[in-house]
Amino acid sequence: MSIVAWFGKIAGAACKVSIDRQRSVGVLSAMFKRVLKWLGGIVAVLLVVAAVFLVNLIWFRPWSLNAFYEKIFVEVLFDQPELLSNLGLVEQFGITGHNARLDDESPAQQQRQFERLRKNLAQLHQYPLEKQTASQRLSTAVLDWFLTVQAEGEKFQWHNYPVNQLFGVQNQFPSFMANTHRLFTPRDCDYYLKRLEALPTKFDQVLESLKVREAKGIIPPRFVVEKVLKEMREFVATPAPKNILAVSFQTRARKIEKLNEQQRADYQSRVEAMVTSKVYPAYQKLIDYFTALLPKTTTDDGVWKLPEGEAFYAQMLRQNTTTTLN
Image 1 (cartoon, helix red, strand yellow):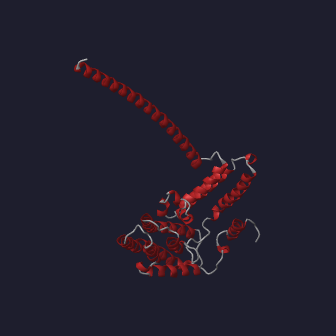
Image 2 (tube, rainbow, N blue to C red):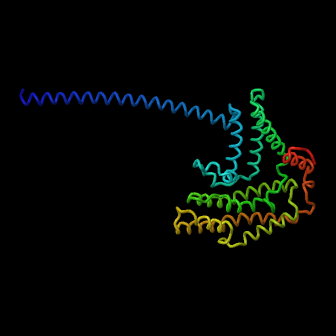
Image 3 (cartoon, one colour):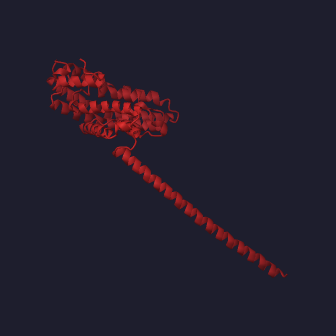
């Protein structure tokens, strides 16, 4: 066989191998595309099923009674970012965005909460008791009582004092930031700043609700107003670097290993600036309001002086003790 013929056979064999390889690649490529298409179809179906489940879970009555119980719990948690931060249940799953927000204190939000109570109570009654297990019937009875009592309290939703000397919003906020807001990472520091920045909005919402109460004749006793005024005036008179919001941040930020000294100093400077530019003006608005309110206050303390005070007392008795005993 000549060299030319030999090379010709090699070239032919190589060409055949190349063609076979191309065919194999083509077959594999087609198979791969079919597999991807098949998997894509499964994913699409799963996404649709998940979407239907979530839509039903969030906006309608869940198919499962147990899911309904969980839905109510989750609704309450994610509607109150401060409570969610306090419980610390979801950070382990990488859910941290709520740590940058404060609770909505507006009258509109309060009304939405009562609307949700009524909706959840109506949905609970749609689950037939005869189809429930003994454990579920007990849970249903407890939840029914809780939702009913809470919904009945709507007519008395303004019969309280959100700013008071014991557990008012004005003294709970610094305590919350110093003791509850987590500070383990640089992101937590950013969230701290965002919460300080959000305080004016929160206090504006509180002021809005206070004015609703005042229009209804629900005004704190004189001693309450005097005590909260003294407390808030002392709070804003403290130099920003010595304010609990700045001092507690500095103490805890020292323990964050991912921050160097320059970063700590930068965060500290921003916190102190936020105390001066956002926090103190927000408190000053409350001070101005209560200063103007003080001449309208009286010394006849007790809920009996409020509109429908006796009915409110009975409602609180039932809500807190489950009985009507006086």
